Length: 136
Image (cartoon, rainbow, N blue to C red):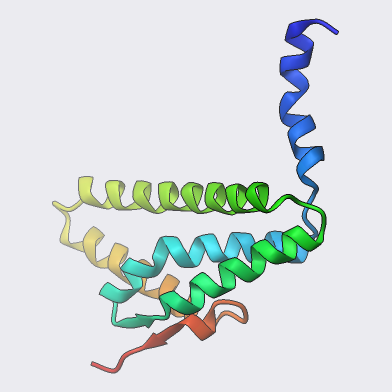
C-alpha cells in the first residue's frame, strides 16, 4: 500500500477502530450538541438551563458509546466535535444577524427564531428536562 493510499484510508480506519454508534446514541450526541450550543442564548431568552444535568447527560452518553465498543477518549472527542460543529453553526447565525442588525425587522425575526428554538428544546423529549422557561 502506498503512503497516499494509507493516508486516504486513515479516517476510515479510525472510524472503524472507534466503533460506530447506534442511532439512539448518535441522536443523543446531536441533541447534546444542540443543547450546549444554545444554552447561553436560551438564558438570554428567559430560560433556566441545568448545566449540571447537561454535563451528567453528556457523561452518560459517552458511557453508552463506550458500552457499544468505542474507546472513552474517542467517544468524548466525537461528542466534543459534534458540539464544536453546532457552536460554529450557531455562531454563523449570530454573525449573519449582526450583519443585518441595521434592520429592526430582521433583529426581531432573529430573536423570535432563537426563542422558538429554546421553546422546542424545552419541549423536546431528550432535552426538555434541562430547560425551564422563566415567567417574566
